[in-house]
Length: 250
Image 1 (cartoon, rainbow, N blue to C red):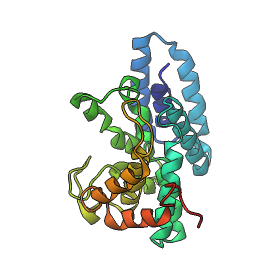
Image 2: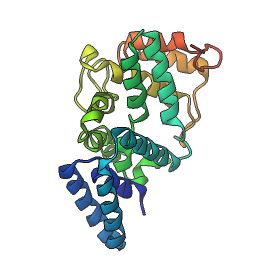
Image 3: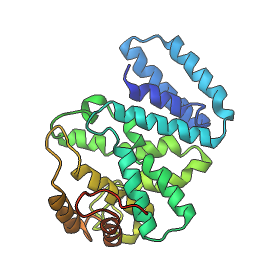
């Protein structure tokens, strides 16, 4: 069974404690399973079990979601480890910006979860080895909002919503989903966007090889002020080894 439908059912149900959104995702899950001829009673049993788990502490929820992030990345060898690397870069940027321990902790969790909405993107789009069509890209662009739907029903996890929703906004307002500009974009999202952009450039993809370090640095500088926050770019470049691209020890 496609992982995204199982995951949506789990996350939308009692595991996140949101009755309304749980029903919505469960109905979607049932509909998809009926289309594919799967046994509903097995999924209903799973759903009932995770409903009972709604009494768990929020930390357990977070750990479960992070585990699903790992499962999401395991579907694609080209993005395996992406969230961990984005997390490492994001925390390094936050420290260089002298943010508080509380802010760094929020960025730590938010950066790990920034792509959680991709659980709801179909495999044939998420794993496509060629460039996406315009229609497919529009569907891919829905993942920030899907991430908000997954996490937004839990009060203690709502603090991560700004990162998840806005990490594809751009300084010049050409990003998505809301076209925010400059400081309208939450700082956490601006930090994660730099980290996300760097990892995308420095990782192999089915349709291209990773960029050389010098070229990637040049592209990052070019994007500073238009796509990316200049202060976050400067903090990132101060936090990494100019010869390896790896985060320097604190």
